[in-house]
Image 1 (cartoon, protein in one colour):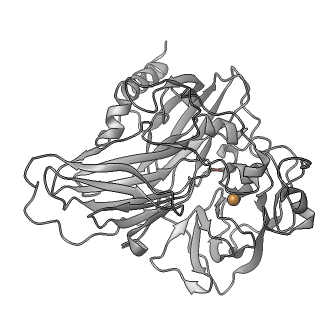
Image 2 (spheres, rainbow, N blue to C red):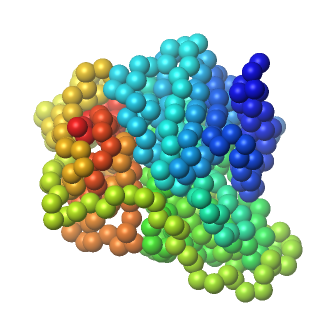
Image 3 (cartoon, rainbow, N blue to C red):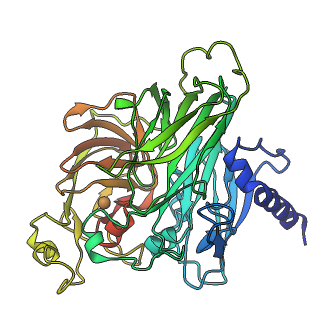
Length: 479
Ligand code: C2O
Ligand code: CU
């Protein structure tokens, strides 16, 4: 075994032995900078996981490196990363590094940016992440089922300078649809669900386990990275007795601000970094509640304070802004304007979408698409022959008016770029926020802008995976 693979093995061993523990507590310090590069070997394969906790039923899953979520990939801003992905599944796969602005050939969309990785084969992803922040990775082949069976994992790109917090914690949140035997329920790609809110699960995990409580000490300042890896579940998190401050959205720092109404909205694929000052009382517990769906609120976990006296007498001074990433500012004066209109789904009344058939239950439903972008439907996952709906000249500033003409929510994800979110329903969006996944409520109109600086064919799709499969997907080209 050569030295390179030796270092891969030891790095992987380190991640494996500590994975659960490290994720549940503080993130590990960065290992030594010996090689100056970040190297990982990630294996996609069948595995078993105890999602409900130790001593409970085991679930057959598909996982990266045998863990749920997959190994934490820690990279450094501006430093080259090399990620070897090995496919030990019995079907083709790829890996998409969600939210990372990388070269098109590394984007992981089968047929569009790379050939799929066949069973038994590997693919080497190499890129230099320009932005520090919270990202994640997942397959982009048969993604409804592959993601739904457990293939996903977090990516943290570390800032060049450490951020002054006591602990940096990640909560990778996922919901699962389990059957009574603890297995993953079958029925992926149910057409009725695809025309409605998608495959929402019945079991919620935090870093791969149902969580009763997470341990904290009074007086701590926490950077808490929240990531929603669910297929379809939108979350609205409230931290009882606490005042979280949002410092980054989708990996991109924004002006620090408290969420509206104290609820942190987290659509599928979104990440939100919050600053949490632990101002509760030693020995007490406070609920973290998700109340997005009317009448279906549940407690995700509790903040459990230990008995120790507060770490410091006074809370740290006012919140802070994270250092900004090097994103190109779009120029409104010269920007090209385009529309992206989302159509279809149940209750759309769209004849073209076979809406009539959809309204009458499962019988007699066609196999045609359910959703469309600008009147065109691309269905399934990445495949050969996807023609771009829009082509932008490289370097141009682009303004997109995104219109949701459907009766459903959609987290719209654009590959290869981060979007400056300008306004929502005519109201300016404050806090200078950038997103790669823009959550749109029914009938929302959202204006976004970006510089088309990354050449290639980039997918744009809804991250409710059933919606993507059923037509809410398109391709934008930067030439
Ligand atoms: Cu996270 Cu195209 O996806
Ligand atoms: Cu959608």
